[in-house]
Each structure stands twice: as C-alpha cells, then as structure tokens.
Length: 128
Length: 145
Image 1 (cartoon, each protein chain N blue to C red):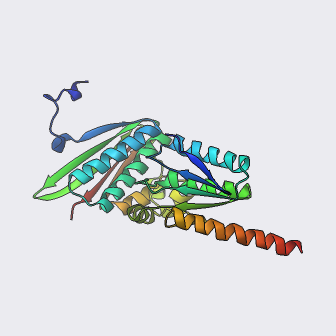
Image 2: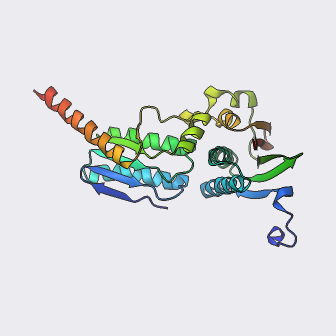
Image 3: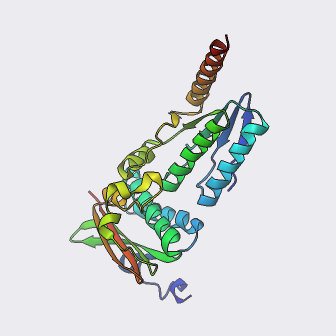
C-alpha cells in the first residue's frame, strides 16, 4: 500500500496508513528521496504511529531513508513509535542509531523547525 | 485444498495454522496471524508484539535465504500451562555454522546475519536444527504467564 506524502510548508510528511511490506517500504524510500528534491523541502517527517511491528527490515529502511535524506541536504525525524514496538525493538537489538525521533507529529514538526533554523543560522554565521 | 474443508480440518489447538512463506507479503500475513492468535489466546499487547516481531524475523530469513518455506503457529496447553509455539521450516541451503549465526555481532542491525540471537531474546524457548543442503527448522515458544 502506497504511503501518502504531504507537503506542509518546508516539510514533507509521510503518513503511514497500514502495515507495510518490504516493497512498500522501498517504494516509500524512493518516493521521499525524490520528493524532497522536487519540493526543495528542508525536512521530512515519517509518521509510524500505526505500525504495530518494526522489524529489522523496517528499521534498516527507515535508517537508510534518514541517511539518504541527509545526503540530499535535508533532515528526517521518525515520529510515533509505539511503546510495545519500542520494547520489542530493544529486545531484538534494533536501533535507529543517529536518526532523530519524536513522540508524535506535533513534536516532530517542532523538532524540524528548531533543527532547520539552527542549520540556517550555522550556515549564515560561517558565511560572515 | 482438503485442509480448507471445515469438516476435515482439525481444531487449531492440535495441529496449528500453517502459513506458506514465499514473498514479502507472506511475512506480513504470518506476523498478523501470529499477533491475532496471541491476542486470542489472551497474551497482552506487549507480548503479542514480541511474538509478531519474532515471526517477522523468522519469515524474513525464509524469504531471504531459502526462498520458500512455511511457518506453523500453534497454541499449546500442557497441564494448564499455555504457550504459543512457532515453527519456521524451510528446505533451503541450511546454515553452515549455527554457532556463529547465534552470535550477536553477527546479527540484525547492520543488515548482515539472521537476527537469530534477537529472536532468541524475544522468546522463552528457542531451538534450531539446520543442515547444509537440507534446510533449517527454528522452533520458538512464548509461555503465557
């Protein structure tokens, strides 16, 4: 099932609606990485609230997406990992490493707003 | 398929539910059936998630390494102790070095390895039998506490 990707100002929001197969996850990765250039977005939010499992493939693909988005010059935040999902990920030994996470969509938007502002400021001060 | 005939179908408690594993869609089906069974058996949402995760990893190994196989989900009851048993079976290439495959560094996060140590951690019991050229069977169990 295709994941809708919405443009919200400078950000893209990929809002997962149902369980995803490996092929769906790879399609999401390709779509987000393309669209971030198309819309010249500075940040991407991936909302995984509805996922009742994040297995090794899902975790790895989300990590890949975040790294690819960074190489495209934007930031990613994963939002909505549920408590039971977090528990099983830790038990299985899965990590998102340096990928940013936030409690929910609202926190995710707040995070990206702060982060992109910091980056702009950093670039401006280096430019002087 | 004769198994679909309700008159001939044994009760789920005795033989379990078989799920054919061949594609990434089957991985999702298997873990959803496992979660549903766990919930139906009265496991809490946290344990149901753990069971679902273990099934996902075992099914993924089948698709990645053996191409096809099956997963059998079975509720068991011995002297009032209830458990969910999951058997993942394939006739794929087998694992040459099971000891190595069970080592943590050899595992999930980098995308290498089979994630088996993680599955072992998720479940209460874990057995693996593998023979090169013949296939692999992994049997795991979660007790209801």
